[in-house]
Amino acid sequence: MIQLYGLRMSNYYSLVKAVLIEKGLDFEEVKAPPTQKDDNLARTPMGKMPSIGVNGQYISESLAIIDYLERLQPSPSMVPADPFAAAKAVELACHIKLNVELVARRCLPEALFNTPVSDETKASTERDLDRGMQAVGQLMVCSPYAAGDTFSIADLYTYYSFGLASTIGKKMFNKDILADYPQIAGLIEHLAERPSIKRVTIEASS
Ligand SMILES: N[C@@H](CCC(=O)N[C@@H](CS)C(=O)NCC(=O)O)C(=O)O
Image (tube, rainbow, N blue to C red; front, side, top):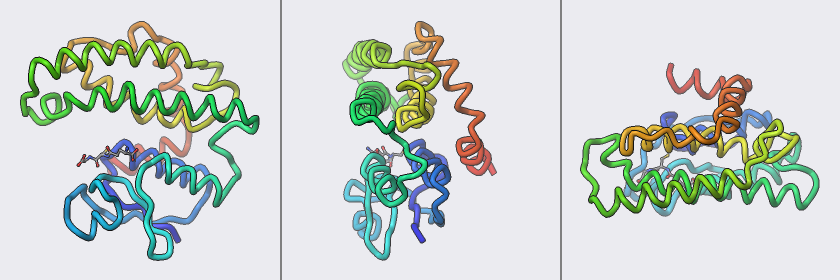
């Protein structure tokens, strides 16, 4: 049995949980806040969530965890069967994660916890967020799924990254980062109805 460590409020935790559900793998959730305590650092060297436990050994980083789960339980796959299409889905997931979500996070202390960030940080975040959205907009297929005709890792990063990034965009810059990307907004609405994602959402609020 796989242990999933972290908190249900975390978007990356939720993303990995959705993959475990999609793949029908047995797992148990273990509450583990992101701390710098030794036991947590042993599981996840930056102290972040999520991490998973497998027979007393640990993996951190959502992409590494999903890669492991993919090899452990190849079906249903979270990447398209065609090698090039698979790489494009991972490429899109990386751009969403690194150039949208991670950029928006620079302003997370102020947006969510009322801890001010500097004007320089705000300016660079707004600028880089626009650039990241252009990159994602260029790669996003949305026909019907993020990376093409099959549900993939790109849909999971779409669903679980834009919630936080949009909240931060709205609070910090009074900007709807998806305003110019109605196809992404539509995809997110569609993904919210997917059973794995629905279950994760319901359990996070219970
Ligand atoms: N790159 C990591 C990001 C994980 C991450 O940022 N987790 C957040 C919660 S969603 C966290 O643990 N934040 C607390 C901290 O940074 O100390 C992944 O993909 O798993």
